[in-house]
Each structure stands twice: as structure tokens, then as C-alpha cells.
Length: 292
Length: 239
Image (cartoon, rainbow over all chains, first blue to last red):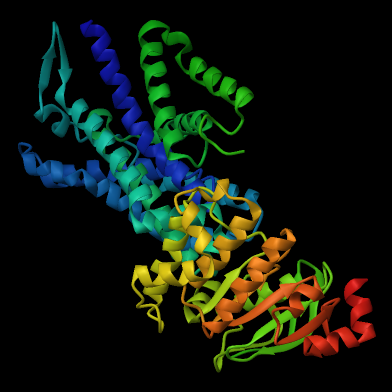
């Protein structure tokens, strides 16, 4: 029973981070119809920025509770990056075919990877002091890192906050209207350029937050963005690109299958995920919550 | 109030509007009549800024708006209801109205300070039946209901002029009469109207003046009676 509970918590941990990445990817696609291939490395920027800032402030000293306030640094850095990328690199391509947007975001994915290497070097960055400082709790006869619970709670709060933001605020209603009919929204007075900038920035903020909260547990390494992007795509294929509910359900499914896959059939863990995505594609090509 | 001077507009490589000039005066209802493909929707979309104008000038209340983006034109007081109604399918009718109301408030234009109940009153004065499906999603409305919501939503912006693209198209005759009555009410509120219509008989029931358009050119302008008396116009419009 304890083992099952720990597997379940691990699944929720994966799902929390995956939801933040895939939710951001889905939000951007839902509003702007852009498949942002650079999204994985935006997540990595969040991880690197938080690890770097924690390292700078901590120096060689002991971690204090105030250090946890640095967690959002990565999210803010990723949002700032998004706020620069959208108007400068993406906006000029909106009237072109989708292939151009795929090409530019793929190019960005590679450029960001090199930029991370250029700024922080080829070696991993760690913020594990935040992970260790919280210690562990005992579940039955097993111990479980307390920090993982922080990640799960942050993921849950982020999902609830995003839902409330999209469905219960004025901005959310305008965002949904723009995603459903951009021309009509602009004819009613919506400044679509501003909405696109805000949606892209928010999507990048979510990816950055995912990177920021997981970096104390996993560290920041080159290539983490590409790995995360692949899993995020599995999530959105299952849930439906453009749907936040789909991203949440997809992240939970991938989190559970991956965790139990690692535990019980580690050789084919990723294959099972892709198989699941393939089955969904065959049965519901737009994903469980997607619109055809 | 609204003036188009020698407007040329392309759709892709097709040269659709070939030097259109027309005017709508304050408080006037003007119809743009023509067959399908004559250039009516292109004219409306050019005025709204949804299609870029290649050359010519669009003036609204003494200000040139040719290069303004659509949202700024809406803030100046140009309301728009497209042929397909453009209802946001996953939003409720109430949310469709709220968007206009919020944006009218954000624009800071005259009349935008109206309270939400005043806006509701204005909408319901034109289409009281909208009250029945306020909580329904756009997706679940009939064609006629969508057109009602589109016009009412444009009214929530407190516009000075309304651009209605084929508001009577696809409606049952009894519903057309209902829409004509609504258009007359809007006009009585002092709001100017430019209505694109394919049916000259229907257009003549609401228009003070009308323009006939064919192959992207204005071929007639005058009152409805003169249009009926003009054989060339009748032949062109009826095909």
C-alpha cells in the first residue's frame, strides 16, 4: 500500500511538471495556432535561471526559507524571453504558411540550447540545496522527499489558477474569444497583437515555472528541454492540442503510465507512452478534448 | 459620417473592388445591393479593416481610417455583424455581449460609459427575444438567433454606425420582417447603417438610399424607387 502511494505521488509529480509545460504549449496553440517547438527549451531556461539565481544567492552558505522565493525567477525569465520572441521573431510570420512557424520555432529550440551552453557552460547546474533542506517524510515504512509534495501542490495550484484565469476573468473571456475567431474579436475591438503577446508570455511563464520547480529535484542539464518537449507532445496528442483540460488529463495519464511503467516494465516505459498516444490518434485524431 | 473614395481591394490576386466610392450620412440607412460575388462583403470588410485596401481612402467622422487596424476602427464607433454572424461558439450569449461591453468601456468613446443595464436595455430593445437564450452557448444557436446576437453584440459597443453583412440572408420571410423592424429601431436610435444585401426588395424596405454594385464597381446610387425604375440595375441585380 505504501509503495502504491509513493508511486501515485511520483505520478502526480511528473504530471504537475508535464501539465505546466504541455498546458503552456496548448495555450499558445489554442490562441495563436502556433506549434511552438522552442517550448522545451523555454522550460530549460526556467530551470537554468532558477538554479543559477539560487546558486548566486546561496554561495557556499546554508539554505534559508527565503531562498524558496527564488523559485519564480525561472518562470519570470521564461516569460520575459517569450515577451521578446513573440513580437520580434513570430509576429512577422503570422501571415505565412505554418511551415515557416515550425521552422523558426525549431531553429529557436536549437539556438536556445546553444545559448544555455554559452551562458552557463556544458555542466549541469544544481539547486539541490532547496530539495535537501526540506528533508523527507515517512510514509509507512518508506521515506519520501518533502520537496516533491511542494511540486505537486504548485502544479495543482497552477492548474486551478489557470482555470480560474481563463474561465472566470475578463481577460480569459477575451482570450477564449480570440482563440475561437480572431478576425471577429479584432472587429469587436480586441487588440489581437496584444492578446497574442500576452498568451505567448503566459505560455512561456508556465513552461518556465515547470522548469523552476523541478530544478531543485533534477538539476538543469543540456538536452532537458528536448526530452520535456517530446513528453509534452505526447500529453497534447492525448489531451488535444489547444485544450487546457486535455493537457491536464493527458499529463495525469502520462504521469501515471510513466511511473508505473518505470516500476513494472522499465524496458518499454517510453514505448508504452507512444503506443498510448498512437491509439488516441487512431481513435480520436484531435485528442480526447480537442476539436476537429 | 462614412466615406469611401476610389477604394481598390484585392483578395489574394483577385482585384475585387475596382474604385468603389460611397458615403453614409449621419442617421441614414444605406444598402449596398448586388449579386453574390459582386463585392459587397469585400466592401464591408475593407471598411472594417479586415482586408487591406490597396489604394483609395476611407474617412470616418472626418478622420482617415484607411490604415487603422480593425480594433481601432471598432473603438471609433464602427460596429460590425458579418454574414456568418461570427458568434464565439464556446462562449455563452451573455459572454458574447460582455466582450463588446468591456471593449466599449476600454475605448473611452462617447456612450461607452453606459452601465451594463443600459447596454442590456439597448440590446433588448432591438431583440427582446435574446433574453431567452442568454446562457446558451453560441454553438447551440440557430442561424437566425446567431444573426440576432451578432447585431445585438455590435450594438453593445455603442456604435455610431453599424455595418451589417447580409443580415436577412437565409431567414424565413416572417423572420426577415422581424429583422427589418429591428433595423428600423436601430435607425431610430440615431445609429447609421450600411447594409449589404442581395435582395433589392428587402433592401428597399429599410434603405433611405442604396448603391448597386457589380463586379467591384458601383453602377447605381439613388433612392430605392429609382433603382426599381432602372432596367439596367434590375437586370444586373436579378441576373
